Length: 127
Image (cartoon, rainbow, N blue to C red; front, side, top):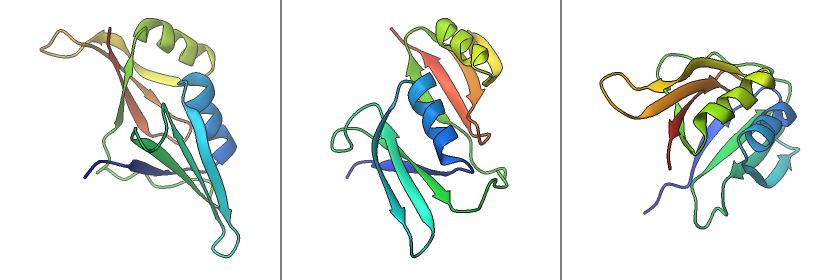
């Protein structure tokens, strides 16, 4: 078995695709519309779905926002230049709500940013 994807419901598909591809460097892998049930799926990631876990962005036509609830935590992404990435994200208007710094009680540098729909993304510094 292997983990295939995580699905996020989004209120503006183009805006979300731009955030993940333009700002976080992912690629749009595939996209499809379902006219009968009125939704669009877009799969994004850092590599092909056969070898990598990806994110499925689901846009239910006409739904612009969702209640985030309290159960979902965050998505984690490794970042080689976490300080530069956070600066780029902020310049683009993204909400970097936890600036890069050491994780409490540890020696790993992390930061947190919200995507356009409010989903939390933990950025973890890596070499």
